[in-house]
Image (cartoon, rainbow, N blue to C red; front, side, top):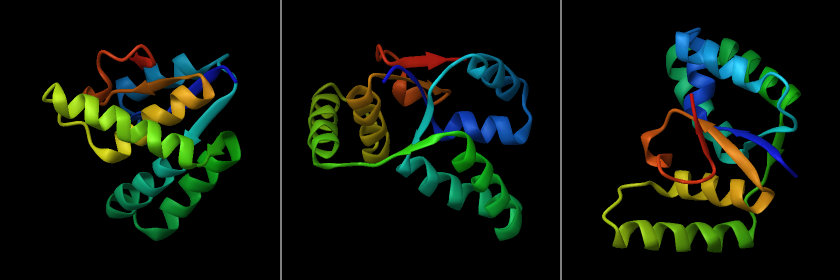
Length: 129
């Protein structure tokens, strides 16, 4: 699979209608396939519900799921994420576990990550808008 893995930060900007979100949408045009990690659903649920409440959040997540492929975390991704975390910790990075799992998912499926999250800066898989 080649395509794009859309990170939580990109979705949040898209849903907020920010200029960065508009650039992210433009970047997604003609990109196929478009996917998200199942962990992005987790992050979106709590972040969006805090901002918009349950009903609007459900509608937004329905839109995400209808327009992307939701990728699971399996044992291969979990082990690779652990390796990423260990290597980043040795380098003094504060990248979190969820971001390591998302990066490992991108690598497993040969996807680029569309993100504004600074923790992904410097990785070959990252597309920052």
